[in-house]
Length: 111
Image (cartoon, rainbow, N blue to C red; front, side, top):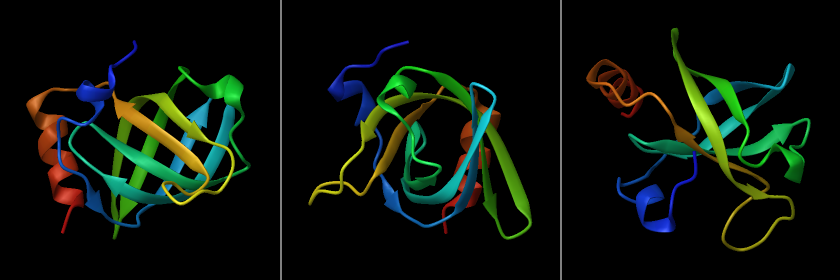
């Protein structure tokens, strides 16, 4: 599933650092979110680093806030492999679950 630039920016992003675990192609990546919206998030500084071959791959993302865990199916829609002024090293993901229950769960993560 590919989204245009306009589709990826339809919801406001909130800057927030939350612990995440991403399972992609049988490999686990961990780090902190840089921002989150109803439709996606930016996963900064994944360990280990994501490769360009991960672009457009679908994975399972778990985001933790306090003792709450939210599991989401997501697609990697952007990768930054070198630090720059716009983005830290990491990945932009689009959430693939769009039902109201998922939206409400995401909103609970945002203070």
